[in-house]
Length: 472
Image 1 (cartoon, rainbow, N blue to C red):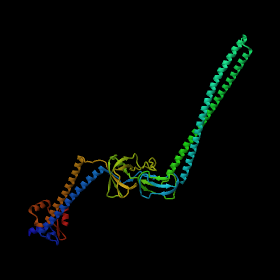
Image 2 (cartoon, rainbow, N blue to C red):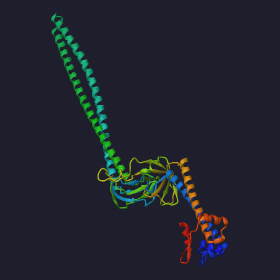
Image 3 (cartoon, rainbow, N blue to C red):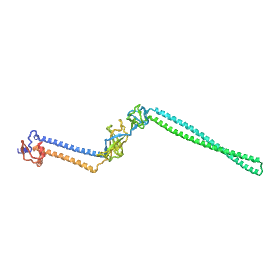
Image 4 (cartoon, rainbow, N blue to C red):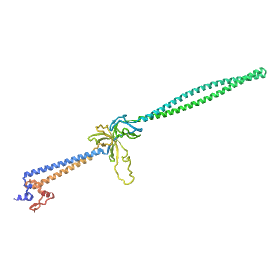
């Protein structure tokens, strides 16, 4: 009686209907075993979760230090705009939208009839000037022959004049000797007269010869001037021939421009030309997208610390999910994209709010993407640049391992504490079912206070945690 009374005092809820104290000792032990097993499972699950979170955090930190990525990136290419060099009406359009063409393929033709007529006109003018040049060249040759004849005549007349000069001198000397002989009475007067007549005759002949030589020289100078005139005329005709030939080449080029051909391989895009359109010089008819595309990625300023040309890049294209392409960093633009925009910011006026700028980085594909779906400029991509091989330092590894061990110890302590508390509570509820060691351990930890009646039940003044167990 005294033992049951003490058990009732130790556990006032023992005799309540539906209480665990009404259960047998085997059932209580089974329940406590299931509770401990459940708590152990929770503890191990928490420990595994901590390990997973630590591993994931470690990997994520290393990944963020080893790679840089951005979603502000697009495919670009050296797009070629096709525009005519001449004005005219479109005669034929030989390509369709999104058609692949090779270099030299005919794309568009313009009505060439006006340019054919201009070409024939220039050709006729060139032929006319060439004929004039031929006539002038023949005249020059004729004048040169005439000049040679005049030179020969002048030479002959000069030789005759030299002979006449010799005769005149001889006649003058003979006259002088005859005059001396006549003065001494050696010769008759008629001999003197004959000598005078011969001297006068030879002098007249010499004078006529000298005048003829002078006339020959004048004719030769005139012929030389005429030859120079014809040579100048020939040069003028030659210049006109060169000018007309250049005009003819220009007409030929304009005629060739009537056929618009592809300057390089590519896909036909943005085609706006139609048959019958009248097009002007420089008007864009269509565009060619080449196959050698590249990526312009706009990284933030604080992402460029380790990005360098030549680093490998993994490129993901939004239109091709699940596929990746290899590339490398080509170059980094010297300036932000906003600085080269149409209306750059003026930070020297008004209130200033610092905004992180983006720097364009050019990325090249290692190989031309071979895909069933055509890709082109403007498509969104997500490049991932491998900037370095990140390795944890010894201090970082010690810190991570120490933190994980500390958290695991705290979880283990928490689970053990809950298990001891539950065991103590279960022992109190089972009354005399605890072993002597457990009872002594419980008495040393929990000394019941004097009971007092509350609604027909005994409650004890214990610690706050034991009070919650009693209310449970």
